Image 1 (cartoon, rainbow, N blue to C red):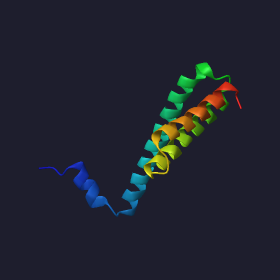
Image 2 (cartoon, rainbow, N blue to C red; image 1 turned 90 degrees about the vertical axis):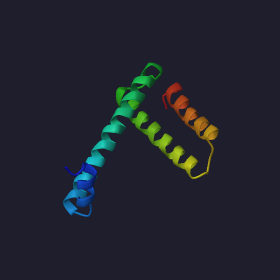
Image 3 (cartoon, helix red, strand yellow; image 1 turned 30 degrees about the vertical axis):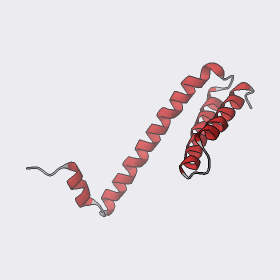
Image 4 (cartoon, rainbow, N blue to C red; image 1 turned 120 degrees about the horizontal axis):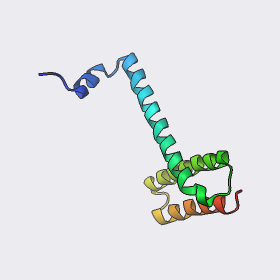
Length: 100
């Protein structure tokens, strides 16, 4: 019987090279995931935004960051979902309505 991938990975835990590879794979995954989210936001917001492509990209990244920060605040019990949703909505609407 062959060992499972998880068994092999568990055996390699603590190995410096394996840890570096694992960190690199995770970093690459997170970067690619963020890139996909940014593209989704850009595509969804472009019809409503009178912004350059570069500005829309930057604001999409910022909106995702704001959403993550609000989610963390909710997780810590510092705010509730309706308040977080209203804050994020306000940010998006203001950025798209007046371009500032």
